[in-house]
Image 1 (cartoon, rainbow, N blue to C red):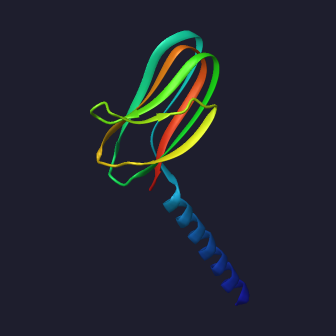
Image 2 (cartoon, one colour):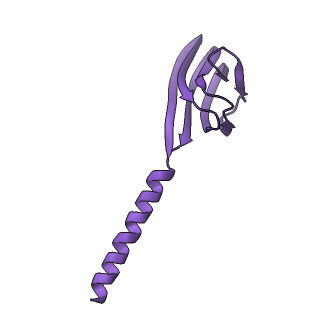
Image 3 (cartoon, rainbow, N blue to C red):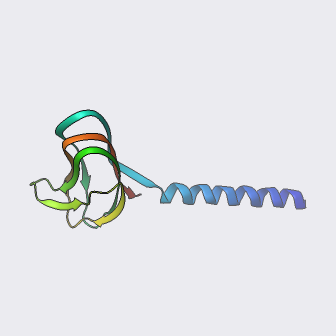
Length: 123
């Protein structure tokens, strides 16, 4: 009888952990990753919808061999919401002020290297 209670308790604990992990994980709103082997000047972007009060997480990683890469978050009217630092690694949080379609743009100039960026929010 004690073994059955211990097994049921263990199953209940595992189920609770799985439910909590599922409810608190991040929902990916968009991402991009590029490796540029020859000097290039261009831009890449992705868009996502956000709601007023959403707290988004922006994670980026860059390896710059030459040139520059800038990351800019803008709204649907082209207004800059955030200009992100040039960094090897950056994780920052931003609270959205209004419902809109947002665009994250990577602008690179005479660039070789690689970069990746991901935007997510809690479910």
